[in-house]
Image 1 (cartoon, one colour):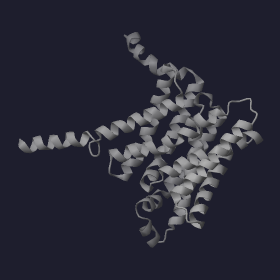
Image 2 (cartoon, one colour):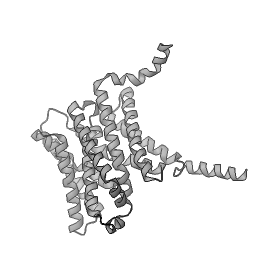
Image 3 (cartoon, rainbow, N blue to C red):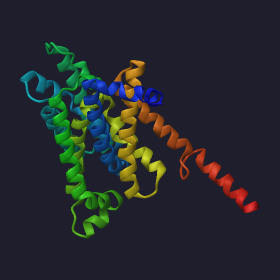
Image 4 (cartoon, rainbow, N blue to C red):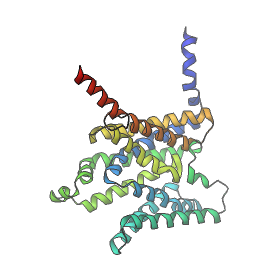
Length: 294
């Protein structure tokens, strides 16, 4: 009887016998939770493109950090904050609108990163920066991700009411004595920190998926922001675990598989969400009509 019960558990326990996969799971779940929480505000404020910009703009910082022997997170954080400052400066000191400023800054910095990769002699594959290297994450990288993730979540918890008010009504926030400019700067700083956390999991190119997809999925599943703050990180964490397991058994790229899992979750919510799903709302309406006839 015990042997029969243990057989179905083997597919679940087998990957956990490898330390590198346990580390990959820890990094993915941590990045998913942090990105999932911040994703709620990014979706509400409409900063999806800003998340894409910051995630790509950190590339030259990571390469330069490798050249001088500094932690990747330090270089990524510096260039993430630099991108935010440059976008703000271009927007505020010229006729160029924010979306154009974002496009100019992030493409220029990303291209600079690609140029630096092409001219930097390296014994390691710097392309892992672009697409992630989940299965090669070291113990030191894991501790770094956990520390940065804890700092980001702590700030979010402390300032969640102010950030929520800023997302829904910046004018009212200003009227009660809060500074929308400072809250916006805080949110951008948290965005830069979160990009650094997620960079280890899925790389520069796919970070924006972790930053946007969980919040967009939760937005389709609930009308209450308090519930959204729970649903979004849960979706990100579950999809992260599913993606790692699927990549293990199908021998696919781990970061890409995690993002595909997030895309599938969004597609299911888009189609079958009871409140906002394309098919779910029609099914609910048909059910209500049947009840009325009865």
